Length: 237
Length: 143
Image 1 (cartoon, rainbow over the protein chains, first blue to last red):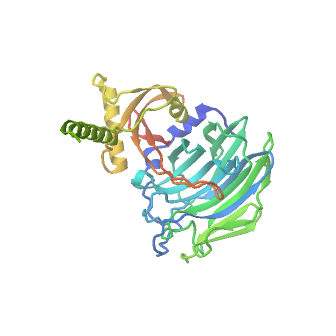
Image 2 (image 1 turned 90 degrees about the vertical axis):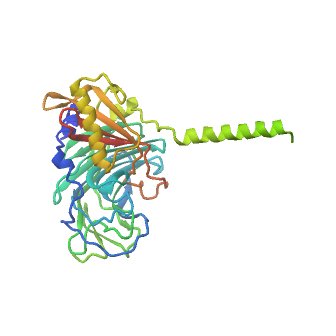
């Protein structure tokens, strides 16, 4: 199913053209609205999580959107999959984000965080997938390595973390003024969400309950197995 | 307190201030570690930030990297280091030489898992890996 090896990794990296990377500062063209709330620089999440023994992967097909992002805080808005270990103190995260890296330009990109400790935290970024695509983001834990895939292509492989014990998928904002992914009539969709167990990566459709930090700002639904949808309560369309 | 002692204490105080000032103005560590290289798919790179003996092609790559960083951040970074990789990133079977520019800082756009520890989403350094021939962005990292 998955191509493996560093050669493929680098090919994928090189396939990123300037045009792709400079899908930056995207216009608010898809599922974007300004919810007209004040700034508070507070993080909010809505998604699902679950623990599993012999956990070896998480995957979800996530809609690429360009939500309204004020740029008031640099950390922006994301929709990602994640594996955590060591009692949720270490993690691997993978998905799309729209943010201001280093207080620079607003950008949409694919991002990875691999957090071993505050002194050993790596973040990699790649050119974004087109708005409107339903992109497969997947993290597999195999032979002691965390492998990060987009649409079944291996982007990067990382080591140094123990086997995962928990999966999470969620949308996330860092300021009340910014749009939580999706709107009431056009949800952000995370579909075909599955976790994997064992060395043969047996797939299990995710059906765990949703969580929502702030239902006055974000909405979330779980209409069917493996499908989660989020939206901003302040955005009708 | 004798005059000589006062002068001595004042000298010590001034020296301490100078040390602090120097430390505050010290350039951040922007060296690429082996782990940094590995994570962007490279095995080795040479710091050419102050190299005045580069070939025309290498000098152009370094210039493109600095221009890219200036464009990326909106202004020229106060500190930066530029590396020419000694190996290549393969693309469609053809090796592509790359140049890396490393600058301080970076804000990581994630803040960890639900139920996890809180931490400042700040990086110490940020690297942009570019095609040495065209200046095209290939990938980036923050640590």
